Picture 1: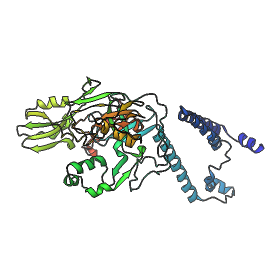
Picture 2 (picture 1 turned 90 degrees about the vertical axis):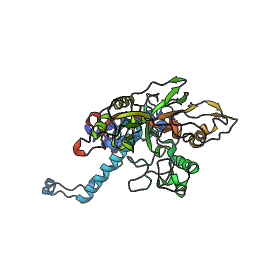
Picture 3 (picture 1 turned 120 degrees about the vertical axis):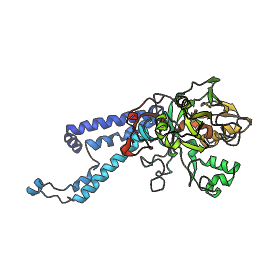
Picture 4 (picture 1 turned 180 degrees about the vertical axis):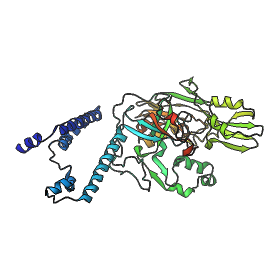
Length: 463
């Protein structure tokens, strides 16, 4: 007891301040985790360890500091330090700093905020290729990780290859308390639902799409992706939180009835308002004269999207505003929307005659819903039972859904791999909502030509 009191008396003001700050943060975090699951309050049993770090120090947290080399002043006074070792001190200083940074980043990325880079143009012009987002995980409630033993800043694979996480242990799905819920129109970051199983040689398109291509179109079309049918036998399975991160707009929420007719989305029988950033692919026929790169850049068409098909015909993704501007160009003869794709190449693959532009009607399941499974809706909901809820589903029986589901689509409607192709997004796949853009890089420009889009940095209005 005397030793304990002596240690307490030896704590300076700085130590007590640090102890108060970190202990308060730890208590607040445990209470947040324990909402709805009060057994988690047992984590408070570790509070004395946090306090010991800054006060009594029974655990030798800074054991490595015994290697600290003597200062010139200490050497002049003849002070001896048997453990002094400059090289060991520097080594352990770096290890200590790196471990602290990794642990801090792990908790921040898991429960609070995460960086996300826009890789494709599926949400042009709302979010552009090269935008770096700060994603808020707290708004919808952060998820307790399925795979707690993982390396921060790496989604699933190290740059040099190999998994960046341990398969075990795996925790059950649990979402902490948030202050908001996913609403129609929200831009949402989520784990790719079809990313549970991927081809080891090609992750995009997903394995289900590749198998469908092989089955319906044959080996030749598969080879256009640089793989063969044998490659489809080599697959990688991933838990929910290790699947690729996607970002789309939520167009339907649990309990909604959705149908797409001639590119217009109908929710519960009512047409959704046309978003100003919606884009569709168009064939632009000209009088034979070309467009200048400057004009196309000012119009907002990236280099990647500029396709010349010959005979004066171009292929562009255009918003309504861009289409109207282009129609007034003296070189343009006509602008026609790209015809819809072949039926049956949308979710559920091979079990419908729907298309990208004319889809449904379908019902978006809500937690607790009980639906009679029929021959008509069996394939629509089968993946939910098999891959997300892991319980049997049979025609002629009632099925009760255990989670809420969402329908996500890109604003670039003809260039977006979204729910029309891989189906519902379960609630346990939801990650968070973008807060703001902290960096934006224009890949069409060189660094010396204004590659950083300064006008987009800090942008937070993604409606």
